[in-house]
Image (cartoon, rainbow, N blue to C red; front, side, top):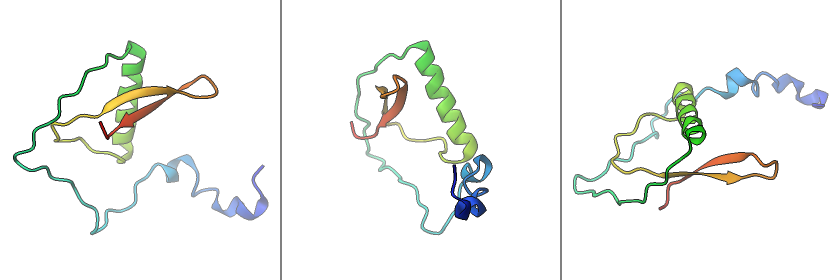
Length: 97
């Protein structure tokens, strides 16, 4: 299914190569909150046991790959699930609440 001229790039798009983070660069940064920051109180939405497990698996997978790291922020973000055409659900994170 893949055109022959692209086969030389097969390794780059394989699971192992695609799940690694690039080396850290000098322009990588962190967002440090001011000492006076007060977190916004958000409504808590309960998730079903299956959805909580999905969120937990997602976070563990992203930590393992190095895509994310544990936060020190007192602010949280809303997580919810959006229906897709194939009737599956896609986890969505709302950073702007």
